[in-house]
Length: 392
Image 1 (cartoon, rainbow, N blue to C red):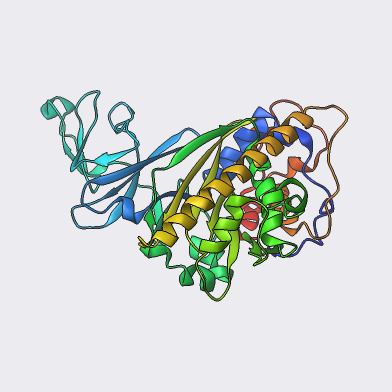
Image 2 (tube, one colour):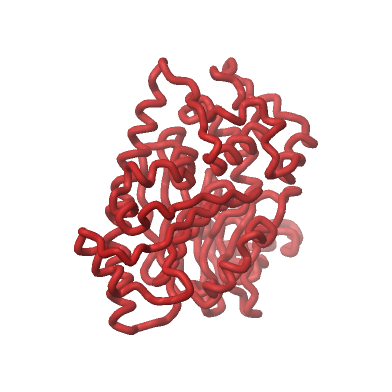
């Protein structure tokens, strides 16, 4: 399937049916067919400067450890002891040259090898080489560390973001440093609603007056096979809002004073500003609850003007975030109505169209206006269909 081609999707002009945003069985299928086979941001390599430094990422029932080894190589493993399956690390980050399971004391080094276990003789000649931590696929993309729980025929992160490689390279992602810790916020909405809202360019002029003041009518959406980019140029006309007007004053100069938003399949985004870059990820907790992970990064710059711009950016986007929270939770509530099934999509809503096309290819039941009988997920589609969807 061609990632850009929508003509083969008979439902291209319509949103996904409401039941797919609240059905537990549909979410279990998404976790198996999408989240386990997709890349997920775990950390930035700057969070792992020394051997033994680790970060933990929990998603859809799995826990992954990303750790820098004594040889300097960053690796990823499931956070599961090979003895009785206990989780090893409970803290979200830390430094440990040895990973010791708190249940029976099995010990692993920073390369995932089993290096020690109490009463080893009781196990009858155990082969330690076969009982290291289970590895997880990892890709370093310009300093951001992505993991994938199951290998698939899908593209690499670099391939997915290839159409935007020039913009990403210009912002020197690999040299970024965090401005604070990762924040986690729960939203009472399905994970797809969070993503739909992020790539919805139509609502900006209606629901975000601050962005409308800052960008005028310049906000535009461009879609690629695995990513969408929304952009707006910051106007030089002084805003009536004090924070916005001050931000315009302190805004770093460059070829363009642009706010750029990049959404990556299936549930991640980069907010690229002249003064900083935010990473955002939305992970399902239940059919109607989503955990949003977010952290800001920036190139080292201690100028007073830059510090002011970053603070004002935070004030502006705090209001945008509050507006989006109200919007997505309003949508989730409305989708519970028996009067609603699907809604029409404008021809310009290319981000939503492309996302929905891929969802229907991976989970064909998403074409049904009503949920299938319970147990429908027990018969998954043939593997070739999943491979074509991943490659599309």
